[in-house]
Length: 107
Image (cartoon, rainbow, N blue to C red; front, side, top):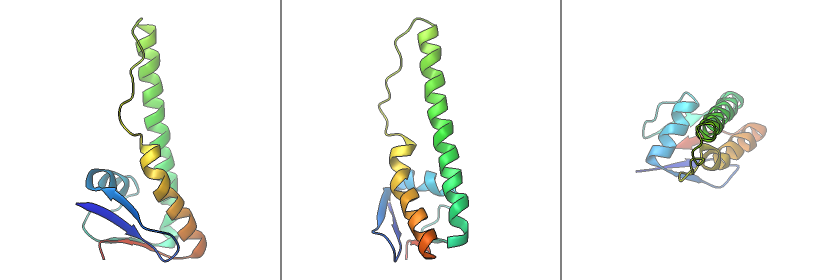
């Protein structure tokens, strides 16, 4: 399954199910097949995503420091970060909030 986020302001943002579900959980939305983010909810959604990104990056930095302190090679990150996955959605949130338009998925 794919999540296809749509708005009247931006192009669609498409995410694989696992990534879309994670983003929706971070912003406090149910990960159902359909939904809506209202303009008044968008600032909080951006803040929640930015906090989650900062936490993920801090955890990666701590893991790197711990490995280096133990005399091991720094772990290589093979996964795409939350920052990379969420930036298009964050941009969509900001632009839709400014325009006063909602974001929907599954409709």
